[in-house]
Amino acid sequence: MNKKVLTAALLTTVAMTSSATGYAAKNPFKDLPQDHWAYDAVTMLAKDGVIEGDNGYFHGNRTLNRYEMAEIVAKAMANFDKAKPADKGAIRKLKREFASELSDIDDRLTAVEEDVNYLKKTQSSFKWYGDARIRFFQNKDNKMTHPNTYWGNPQAGKEKQFEKRLRLGMYAEPAKNLVVDGRLKYEDSSFVHSGAQYDNTPANANLNSWDNSDRNQNSVRLDKLSLKWKNAGTTLVVGRNEFNLGQGLLWWENSMDGAYVSHEFGPRFNLMAGWGDMAAEGWHDVNMPAYFANAEYKASKATKFTVAMLHTTDKLKAHSSSFNTSLDYTYTRIDENATVKGTDGHDYWMEGKSWTADDGTVMGYGWSEQDKQSMNFALDTSDGNLKEKLNGATTTTISKWDEKDYKFNQIAIGVNTQLSNKVNLIAEGVRNNITGNSVTGDARNARINKNGFWTRLTYGKMDWNKPGSWKVYADYVALGNASVDSVFWGHHLNFAGGNSSFKGSDNRWGNGTRGWGLGTQIMLASNTNFELAYYKLNPYDKHWGDGDYGTFGRYDDILLAALSYSF
Image (cartoon, rainbow, N blue to C red; front, side, top):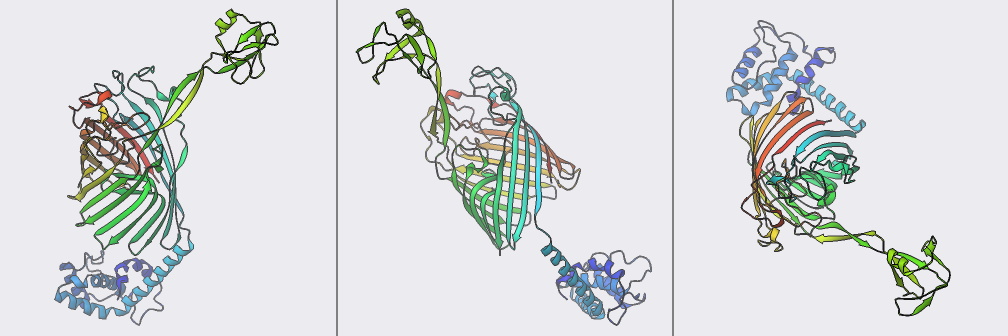
């Protein structure tokens, strides 16, 4: 008898409703007499823990037919190696007694497996999946501080916004061991408030109403499109793929363009390495290539250790724009009654009496020194023709690319352990091994801290398919200003992790962060989740000066509330 007897119970119902025609000589539905020795044998096996229960067959003096008894014997056979010597003898004897019924169970299970395999071959593997999320966020990027120094103006409200995200994916298996996985994503922000007055913008301005960024009408973009091949413990993924590194301080469920390969060295150890462009998520102004690797060791069913690395191979360049006002409206004047001196020092006799613009538009007649002064003309004869330039405001946009100090050579060591049925602990430490204590010598980068730590303790057992299930968690972080990416936010945390800024003309590592947070998640319905979290954070070292951005005692409190649905 092979392993198929483990699922023999699936066939009992079928057998009970089928004809006995074609069975072995013994009728499998014939009741066993109450004094049959098999009852005592099965009772002993149940008592010794070889089988668990009797499927409800033993009730009072009700007898079992041979097929029902064979089902119990099959379960006992599955635990043969764990049985005591006396129990093994009983199992062997039961196997001989019910050999024909066990054989029939095996044949029927084989037929079921063949039917299932046929259905798998004839049915399409294509399927849709996705998720939707609505989220409220306060002080999402750690920009608001007490006292507020980021914008150089007093705080005048809370920095906050609402966010919406919809992702729609497709999954297919076009061939054995081959998977195609793609996903589109739409996300936007609305009711975005700055929280402080800066430049000429009023306090609490809804940014959508003035900066023309169309944050509340964003575009759909390709979030993921990858080809995965898996065979004998080796997995190769190519394309825009999504993966995790360590426990999440380096990279978590975000996209990269590139490839990686992983291999399972037995049931306990897995190693993954790859290369990709971090800009795939749409955050960076230019390509940001990086090497990455992840090693995972399962010490037990409850505990696994991870070592992860992420190393950028190029310098970040950020785009910025400046505006230049020039006076470059050119007009040509023809006057037959006067002589004018050009910029080349020669006198020029004007023909005609009208001023005309470059496009031929008539601007007026006559010429006098008063006209020249009031209209602010300047003569230009550099091309051999007499022209005069009228001062007027023309705005020219000057684009430039600024090279940044943003770079990462991170390594993280972490652990994830299930302390009990409802208690889980995650902890991870990280170091960003960038060269030197000061990246540029800029006053705002006078000191950097490369080390960071995060831990999360969770209580509860939440199941996305079980309405009413829940969990609560507590976070503690101590993140140096250069330890994690607090600008483009590829990590797993619910907040930026600091106030670094390498956008536009900014080039600063910021102040890092240290503090705690509490959160909870509950399943309102199957696949419908509500999350609420609150964080109270300080700078990593509040005594550090930060140049133009000053010093401060704490960050404004962080609050998020999210409603998510997956399908």
